[in-house]
Length: 116
Image 1 (cartoon, one colour):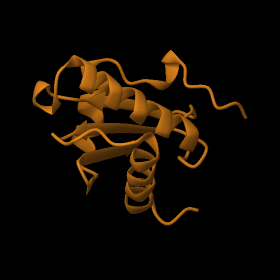
Image 2 (cartoon, rainbow, N blue to C red):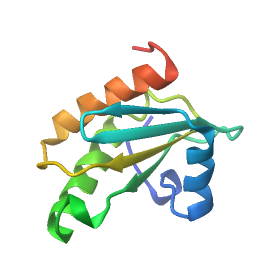
Image 3 (cartoon, rainbow, N blue to C red):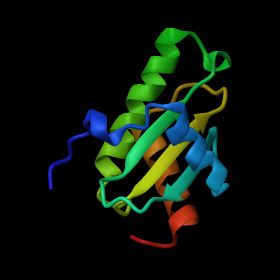
């Protein structure tokens, strides 16, 4: 399996985000609030990111987005197929991609059980 992260793996519209929020399955890890929802679709895991302006200016928010997308891309094989994930980011100092990867891994274990 390739480790690509294409447009079909992103949640882009409000309805997609709202359906994940409606599931009410979340976990707070560090500055991240991670929501997950199992769908009936047999697609690869999809990611949605929400960063308010209070996180920082556009440069900082985009750096955090890039790091989170990369961390998710490298872990996408660990998430089961058909899972939609939304990450709400709280205000914090930007971290390295590896630190975001650890937080996503911890959230995945808490939300979906102890897989790897």
